[in-house]
Length: 511
Image 1 (cartoon, one colour):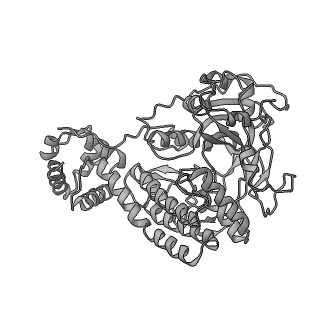
Image 2 (cartoon, rainbow, N blue to C red):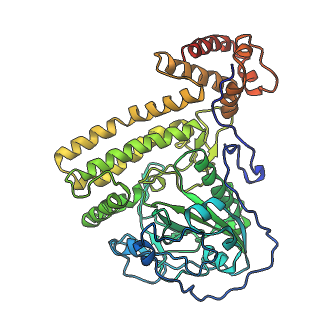
Image 3 (tube, rainbow, N blue to C red):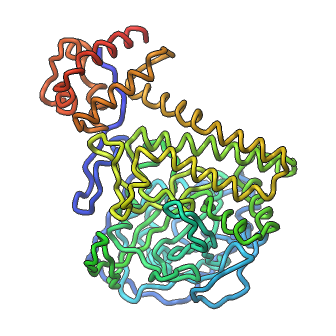
């Protein structure tokens, strides 16, 4: 009998340093466009579209059921954010220390050279943004997603936040190369925040140039869509454009600076607020603003929590702890290492955001580190669950000033329960990968035993589970492993492999 479990890896763009991504189940249609198409000429005029307010007020039944074939009546709005959350009173766009606000107004900086569309996600455009795929071929679309045109009624914003980077408080960080261009409410009534990444400097750019390069932008586009199709909560990528503008980067942090091409990704999420969004307010004692932002986040994104309840922050924290534990367990189940698990990269909605030096583990190794700048290996894949605990503790420290003594005790107890929540989900996921049903006392040992064999033989993480789903029980029982099951064949050389196989087959009989 064959039991099918696990996920396969595909090889994607080796030269861009993208290892195997789990994409067999990925059905998103990426439309790849020629990089050699003629340049697109456009004015700097605004697209005069209607405000998204009318879109938000109309009922679902009244909404257009067909997809928009142009951007003429497609609308965005920043009103939901700026009506409640204060804006930086300084309107000039220069690097500075910002206080007593959540956002700064900052316009994207258009590329100086011609811009080309590299890729779009058909599903994101059609199912989330209500745009027909043909819209992506228009000049208006390319100018919009490259930051050259601003939709009328939208106010581009850069978010102020701080964070702990590699365990150390880094003070003000913020959107240094990203612009939130507005919120879109689609025909399902869902609100999505649209953000351009690589679209120019903001008050939070520090020493950066505000740009992203094609290499890293392709990685973010592909991985965010891959993670979605693996069932892992994540931001999504709508489009990717590239220019001929020169951007200089030290790709391997070895002092060798090379010229690359500037690019912009249009990425979307239900919210871009992160742990660092609250940390910066607590750090500077802006407690009224901290309360305002927390209540806004709860009201918009935590429907199970009553924003009028005195214990609303306890309920909020409990959900974030639970969902963060589940998210990191999901990462581990597919061998995903985020690479930069700073508090400014951890979403309050517990989705995967900010794809930087991520990696997918090939040979099973708990010490796998995809980030070449992580010299101390703080964010190695085997330490991600511990980092989740660290980051949640920083979140708790940020909201503590708003809690009474009893609430502080409750939230501390909730945080103490994080390891149990994480390992419960981890166990469920790995049991599923092994095709184990029900509960048996020895399941934890069976999983740990296999992982130990994989580590010692440096077996491929994904293909081991994939091949276990394809090999027959009789082949396993006889230790007759065909050559095409090369990952299993590698583990079979371990002297304890027959012991594990016998335990595994015995466990399968109880399913």
